[in-house]
Amino acid sequence: MIPPDTHLQIGSLLFEGVDQIDLTGPFEVLSRIPNATYRLYGKTTEPVRDVRGLRLSPDASLAEAPQLDVLHVPGGFGQEALMEDEAVLGWLCDQAAGARSVFSVCTGALLCGAAGLLRGRRATTHWASFDLLPFFGAIPVDQRVVVDGSWVFAAGVTAGIDGALRLAAELRGVDAAQAIQLYMAYAPEPPFDSGTPERAPPAILEQARAAVAAITERRADTARRVAARLGIAP
Amino acid sequence: MIPPDTHLQIGSLLFEGVDQIDLTGPFEVLSRIPNATYRLYGKTTEPVRDVRGLRLSPDASLAEAPQLDVLHVPGGFGQEALMEDEAVLGWLCDQAAGARSVFSVCTGALLCGAAGLLRGRRATTHWASFDLLPFFGAIPVDQRVVVDGSWVFAAGVTAGIDGALRLAAELRGVDAAQAIQLYMAYAPEPPFDSGTPERAPPAILEQARAAVAAITERRADTARRVAARLGIAP
Image (cartoon, rainbow over all chains, first blue to last red; front, side, top):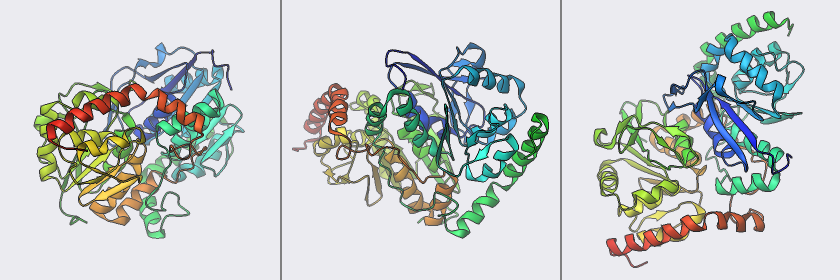
């Protein structure tokens, strides 16, 4: 826990093709952390579209970001286009080096991996990309939220809400996190039990794997290139 | 369930001061419903700010909306400013009259109530506004998701995700909803048990009630005026 009178700079990376709830799930929590400034940073300040079309606007560009205390890296199909983007990867490296906490959600972990930040780190990501973690030198941990030192990893998509509450507690204490949880009425009751590959009906899982097969293959090709660049033998 | 070859028009009301996750939680689900067009409608097409500053952009204005098959009404502090806005209330009435489903999230229920749509309806809303439902002629039901005929009500904030999955199943069948749930990795694991007034530590609840006391009082005043206008004796 950080002294309550220490102001925190919290920032999320925002990019074209983000999966919006990787960002907006944590937003609900991060924007309510006491004594903090929270902003969204994009390559430019132009609005971007999430993978399903939601328009989101950065508050400022990457270059305008101060050293962040908390760096949040969401995922989504659009992460692929940044896996060899030196400006973004360099920004992630610089920010992560000075941050108190780094919070990776979903395939945001692949971006962190491409920036060389996952070597030797216990990590998780979306189930469809989980097998790619070793290409970045990470140790895959099949949990919804994984805490490794100053890093918090949330697995797929909505896991970002669970991870953000965990992070809020690390930063400002359990009381602060519980107050946010109560405001958000976060006592989930999923109407079906289909939220993980293990629990989804087999036919649904097969269909879901088929639906993401093309992007998963592209991600695997990219991960192999990144591993070669970073000198990692998975 | 609606025939799979019937195209659905799905629309959310977007307004200044919305609580973003009342919209973005359902967005993750509604934008993935098969054979549907999903758009966000605002009073104008100008971007708005959520209650914590997230900028969101309508796809079109209320006047441009076709008759919607599914009308989604989110909440948030900004709902108060619309409780006597005839343009918005009229739009809600007209749309609800022709919609197959109406989906109210959080204090979106108060807006529906101000539009006179809750008379005799079993409904829910955010815990801080739950006691106001009778002013709109609604029958309060203390459940996270309440289904009343063609209406789906989700209680506070993140309940919109549970409600949206329920709605997806009503519209396109359980398989479709389960596929979306799996993609979203929605197998929540809240790190604390503080998501309802009953379960939150008493000190946290007291603090939370104090934090929303001013807006709750304004909402109560407005609800009384609406009840008088609608001729409802709660």
